[in-house]
Image (cartoon, rainbow, N blue to C red; front, side, top):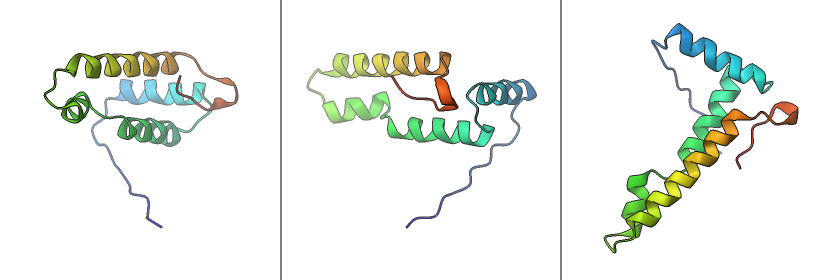
Length: 91
């Protein structure tokens, strides 16, 4: 079993903190839970560079770009609409 790690972010502008805290409240979540969920989701998605590296130099980079655009548009939709019960789900 692995231990959880602590991530501390310094010098966050007050307006950013206020906005994120309000968004977390909209979902019925603490700020820590809200940010943890986003970090877990962010880490689970490959970057464009990782997708392109997997595709190799076979000219499939447009497919990789389409995958990232689709992923990002789904994430944007998820962030706009709270679901009942306060948990955020990916589309």
